[in-house]
Length: 229
Image 1 (cartoon, rainbow, N blue to C red):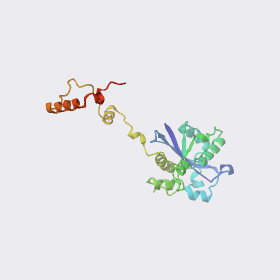
Image 2 (spheres, rainbow, N blue to C red; image 1 turned 45 degrees about the vertical axis):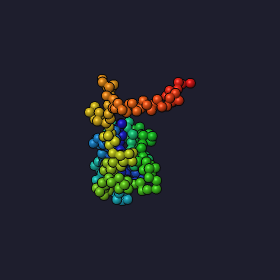
Image 3 (cartoon, one colour; image 1 turned 30 degrees about the vertical axis):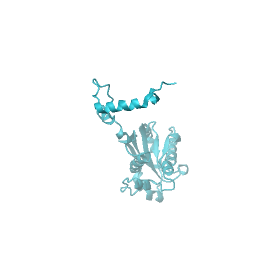
Image 4 (tube, rainbow, N blue to C red; image 1 turned 90 degrees about the vertical axis):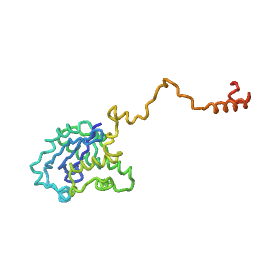
């Protein structure tokens, strides 16, 4: 099973008001294991950078001026994600921006049904508890000490660890038995066929005589002496 964990950084909150993506980070999971394959791009938004957004991610208009346009990397991004489910924290926000950029680049938009929202998973699993990425990193002891500013690739890496904890723990596939030797170690005692020679009786002659005398005392009223109705 292939999944893509991704994040975006933007100039603001609303693409319909002219806000643009300035960074995309994504990485691949296969069978809930991080493979090391990733996609990362800084993007020229073709506009100024509001101070409020700069304080979040630290990406200035000057830094981004010589970076690629989204349209230039759209096909590479679409090839990387393929048809895999897309995992994001507050997925409606990221999907809204991705689809706005895809429309501008004359590409087909992504269906919202592909998105898995880790924020909603966290709120359902821990109702009333803080559910930000930072809060979940603290809950699961995920090291986020390097996150002084938001960054799309770094946040994707942290989110991958958090997501695996939310769905039941990291790398669940490692518990599977993969070879015959391991299987035999977990299979329990083997079934055996009949013994070639029956075991010798453990009753002594005195014990057998005493038992037979006891049975004789029961006579015809013994339960085992009665024929079935």
